[in-house]
Image 1: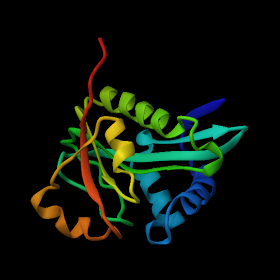
Image 2: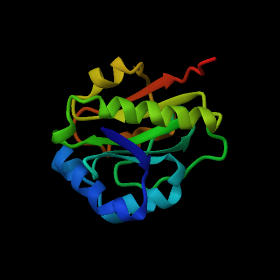
Image 3: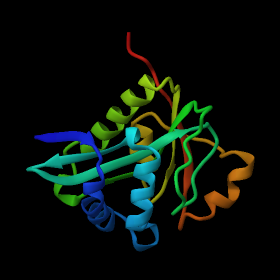
Length: 168
């Protein structure tokens, strides 16, 4: 059984361990950055637990379509947000194939809709484009001023966008 709950400061070490297992070396961000992101946008950070242990997480923040975050940068939620920017989704191997990643994304979308956001955006890295396309994201060109942020990601990186649909 998977339990999705809000991330807390006490989860930072477990989140770092999930990240270290799921991401290639060039993508691993510090505990300090994780903590600063949680402090900046606590309403859009979650962990998934199985057997009482954190095994996945998702961190995001309210943003504007076309804008993206540089790797390792702090979150600066927008007061004019129209998009939930998903910066990080990671799942440990022990939970792979159990639908935990999509469940975290759907959970984040529900919160985004409650916040009045109409879209979700992200950077697809580490050959994850097919995963995000299955969830309804499409590749887009990032905003004009975001090319420097795009270059902070090792390897191919793609800005992707999905429209959030509010169920009746």
